[in-house]
Image (cartoon, rainbow, N blue to C red):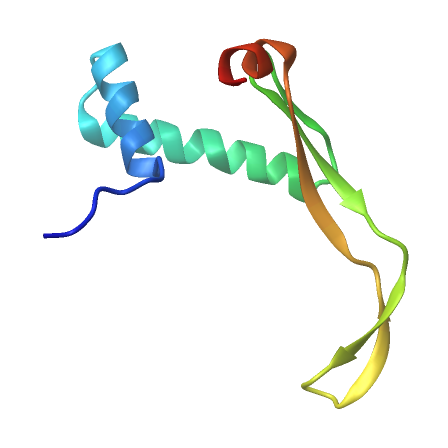
Amino acid sequence: MSAPNKFTTLKDVAKAVAKKTGLDKEAAKKFTAKYFEAIKRGLILGKQVRLAGFGTFVITKWNVDEVFDPNTGRKEAKQIKTVKFKPSEVLKQKVL
């Protein structure tokens, strides 16, 4: 017997959307996928993505650093980027 999943997945979100909105599961799945695709597209374009009542996603650039590339066997200067999430005050109060 497998343990229950401790993560909320895209499938879980789509199921919740279908239940709350009355959409069929397939339409809810497409809507959810498009919603997250829009968030990804905003981040790829270098924009902040602000979701009211949830939080803000921002691309953070680290200092240019020398990193070893195992494919070429050389060190190369690379700009490292990460996605940073800052929860809204509303979300912080509900979670913490």
